[in-house]
Image (cartoon, rainbow, N blue to C red; front, side, top):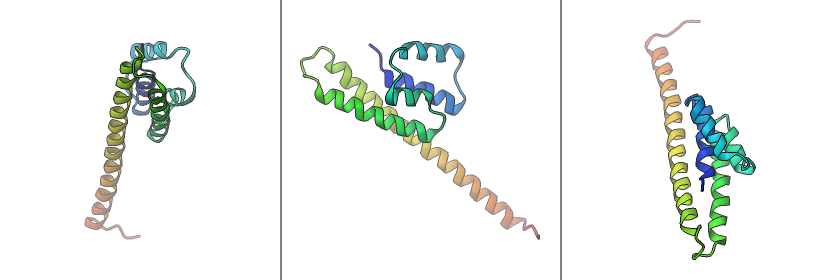
Length: 123
């Protein structure tokens, strides 16, 4: 059993953040072999945080539908619900990452403004 959403998210974030090594990427790609379609493919190939968020949301909707359609006595039910919880948690982590990134950008804008207020440049 594999959590395709999490592996695809790892690939997308490795690209977006410029982190990770070849062996980690290779492992994730091997886990996803034969499952790169729809939101999973979008996540794995994302090259911006906005794309990651959009595809993660779509993957979460698909996973919620999968859980809702399962019978509670299905042997895969508990694992699939666990995947759902893990993906929801990952979604919150990505939202925090995005908010922190926006905060950094805003802070740099404030620093830029303060610098120009402190040391005005005549044009």
